Length: 208
Image 1 (cartoon, helix red, strand yellow):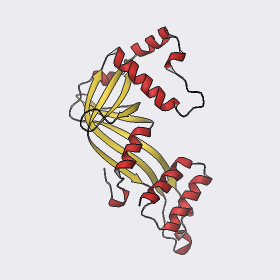
Image 2: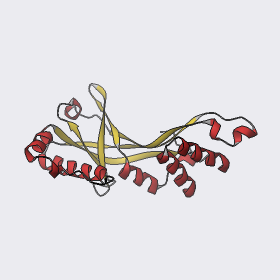
Image 3: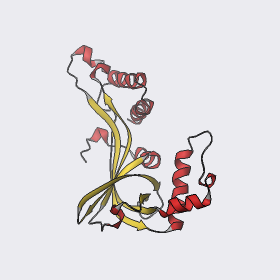
Image 4: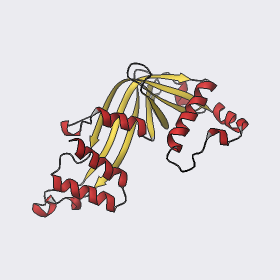
C-alpha cells in the first residue's frame, strides 16, 4: 500500500480500526487464482505474536477448502467519504483544488487457519454477536433463538483465523490540507449526514 508520511496512522488508530470495523474482505491466493469473500471478523490481540482476526465462511463457500498459497490478506475498512472541493476555504482563494476521497483502511496479512469445529464457531458467533449488538438498546443474544435452530445455522459455517504477520495501514483524513480547509471538510461531512467520517477527520487533526 502507498502510505505518504502524513497519512500513516498511529498504533492507537490501527487498534481502534481492528476492534471496531464491520465486515472485511478475505483474499487468498490458491491454485485456482485469487479468491475473495466479504465476511465479519473479530480482532483478538492476544492470539499469536501479533494478534489474529477470527471470522467464518459459509460451508458451501469453496474458499475455505482451497489450499492457500503464501500469505492471506484481510482488507479492513473504517469510514470513507467523497470530499468536495466546494468545502475548501482555499477554493475561494486560488481555485487550485480538486475532489478527493478520505478513508481509513488496513491491509492485514498472515497465515490462514480453518476451524471446522462446533465449539470454535459457537464461541466466535457469540463474540461477533456481542460486538455488533452492543450498540443496540436491547441487544439480541444467540440464546434468544431456539437451540436446534442455532445448531443448524452453526453446521452451515466454518471458522477461519488469520494469524497476523504484518499490517499496512493508512488514514487519509485531510491531514495534508490547511486548517481552514479541514474545518470545511468537517462541516461539509456533517451537513451531508456523514458523522462517522467527520469524527474521523476531527480525531486525525487532534492526533497531528
